[in-house]
Amino acid sequence: MSMPFYVSPEQQMKDKADYARKGIARGRSVVVLQYDDGILFVADNPSRALHKISEIYDRIAFAAVGKYNEFENLRLGGVRYADINGYQYDRRDVTARGLANVYAQSLGTIFTETNKPYEVELVVAEVGDDAETDQIYRLTFDGSVADEHGYVAMGGQADAVAQSLKDGYREGASLASALRTAVRALEAQDSERRLEATSLEVAVLDRNREHRLFRRLSAARIGDLLSAADEGASGGASGGSGPGAGEGGEGVEGADGG
Image (tube, rainbow, N blue to C red; front, side, top):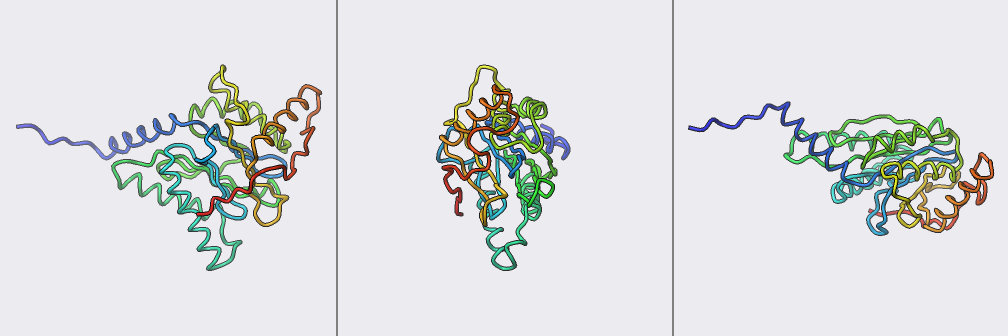
């Protein structure tokens, strides 16, 4: 007679965590970093239709790696949560912290109560009036939340990307030099790979804008900023030379509705 198959709860959780981690590592990376005028989001993402970076609310954005249908589901839930709370109470009551708590509960429940955990990692960020009041929360597949400062790397070979960010990150950098740092970090996973403007998805939360602070950057604008950063570096200039780092540029207004 065969013995009943038993897996301890600890082993079950470990297996689920390993499964989720492998799924997330297969995806392409996303980095989030602070710059002088706000928060910059850069994804290695050649798709023009499937976004990894999205606006959630006036001052709040969302970045994700992993399974698209799973994080898209979470994004839509976040937009609904923000809209309902902003409408019922006050727009200022919708915060990244509140949203991070909602996501933590959802992810935690999915991880413990279903057979297949979500293969996702998220960042929820809110731009403040200055760098001190910016908020960046990172959420993992099991609902853990970390309060991050400066920069975050998720997905792909995140350790290599994070190490490059650690070496290159400068507080208060211009948009152009922060973007160059981000792209170098994404390229750190593969020495052969050069990321062109067209294979990047880039957006900012720009604290100098009015009302909706989220803005997507077009490929032309990304190219201009990277050229400006390279000229600045080769000319020995330390800031974002060339096109003003905080300009409106030709960015497409980035509301993904909901």
